[in-house]
Length: 386
Ligand code: TTP
Ligand code: MG
Image (cartoon, rainbow, N blue to C red; front, side, top):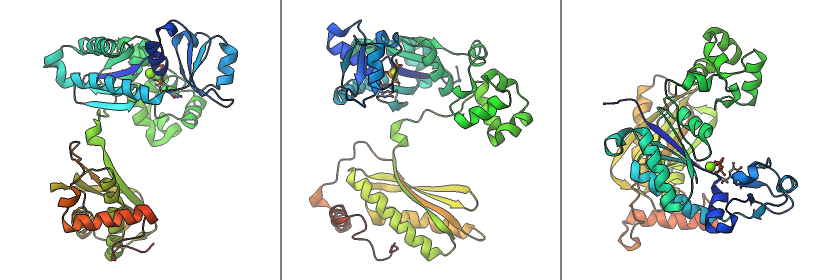
């Protein structure tokens, strides 16, 4: 069995402009520019026909008009793009549940577990392209590799209408000539530092002595070198797992007294559960986040017996987590405290108003008052008055 991961990165070609061309076939083959058409408008995107004139995303529309006066200019129809996006994501779901959406037109798919059903990663990539074309009439580019970084790069290198794979055989040849700024963790400042020290390309970074590189860029050096070698361990995080509602606060002065920390915890739980209820959700997992000085962060997590949106239930679990942690510390001090609820069941319907338990009603009354008169109008007596 092949145990390496198989990751696809999919990105629609000229998304907004292609949707417009699909909906109005008279636009096919023409330069189409979608964006703000007012005096200060910018280009959202344009068809590849317009790109030949040098038009690009984020360019002022006025400049696009100079470069390509004969193009068709359209304002975005976001709800239509969202509709097509949903069709595209439904196709992803046919291949794997492990889909991490990045925007309306872009996602990572971990297809490692789909090989038995659908064949090699390349076969799956071709299937995605074919199905998207059938369902939406649109073209996309798919990058194939064993991690996210290389899969996304493969998409870019294959665009448009691409199906490009980066593997151990071609990755050095493809990575080495890229400018260091292409590594996603290197910002403008990092790029200037690296270039100042003579590291211009990803190949330069790969071949560098780690110690020498660390003197230039500090503790990022090992991480950068891993990227330069084409390594990336980040998992594909499907939305259902990623979704969480959280609140946290950093203290001006580190807290050392448990009652004070408890009061903050209640306040944060109130904030989180109010948002959970407003979203019509119920969570099963409660997590607290604790940062001690100078910068050590820990999380503690528990799973509830039954999913809940009730402040008291979420809070009770959070307090237990906090108190256990507190007892384990020799000199507990907190710089930051956070709470999150997650483990939402997508099918959880908003609760039946009339079947609400007494406590549920109390929460709802609190929420209504807070929504009407501002957050913090009604709060439990134990939570801090700040
Ligand atoms: P992209 O995938 O970056 O661009 P694209 O799909 O138009 O073209 P391609 O991927 O083939 O290079 O963005 C997806 C959509 O997001 C794009 O169609 C319009 C929108 N968008 C903006 O509104 N503003 C921007 O600055 C960018 C980059 C995109
Ligand atoms: Mg795109």
